[in-house]
Every structure is written in structure tokens, then in C-alpha cells.
Image 1 (cartoon, rainbow, N blue to C red):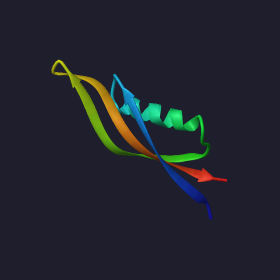
Image 2: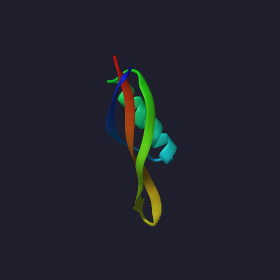
Image 3: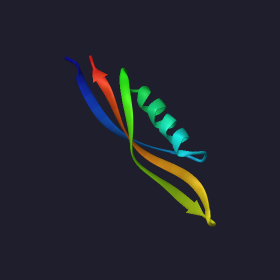
Image 4: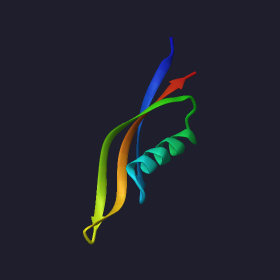
Length: 66
């Protein structure tokens, strides 16, 4: 039986939600090992001058505790 833990990470990107999600996983991997999954809990954007300026995600990352 494996012990799993879930953390919540927020990230942003000026390109896309996908890029923001990749950044969230990359940032989490700096401090935790054995990441098994990432669940995008929410997405939002920042709008400036009627244009999307920034994509934001909140991601739940699940990793195995060894």
C-alpha cells in the first residue's frame, strides 16, 4: 500500500493554461519527488486593456510518500 499526499500549487503564464500547469508541476518537483498526478482545480485570467494578459491555474498535485 502506498501513502499519497496532495498539495495545492498556484501558477501563472503569459502563454496558456497548459503552460501554467506545466510550470506548477515543475515548481512542485523542485521540492517533492514521486509526483503521480496533477488535477487542475481552477483556471482564471487577468485582463488588461480588453486582452488576456495572464493565465492562472490552481493545481492539486498528488505524490507518493516513501
